[in-house]
Amino acid sequence: MTETVDQSEKRAAQRRRMYVSGHLPELFKERERIRAELHAAVPQLKTLTDKLAVKHLRNRISYMRQRLPLLAAEVKALVDERKALLETIRAARESAS
Image (cartoon, rainbow, N blue to C red):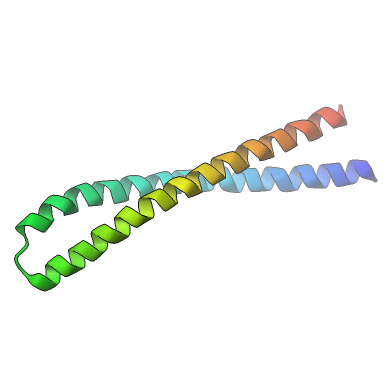
C-alpha cells in the first residue's frame, strides 16, 4: 500500500516538475520582452509631444517597472519549487531501491 502511495506521489511530483520546467522559459521570454520594451520606451518619452501619448507611455513604463520584480520573484519561486520537487523524486527513487 505504501508503495502505491509513494509511486502516486512520485508521479504527481514528476508532472508538476514538468509543468514548472515548461513554464520557466515563458517567464524568461516575458522578462526579456519587457526589459527590451522598457529600454526602448524611456528614450521615446523624451521625444513625444502629445500629452495623452506621454501619459500612456508613462503608465506603461510604470507597469513594466512594477512587473519586472514580480517576474523575478515568480521565477525564483518556480526554480525553488523545481529543486524541491527533484529532491522529492530522488527521495522516492532511493526509498524504492
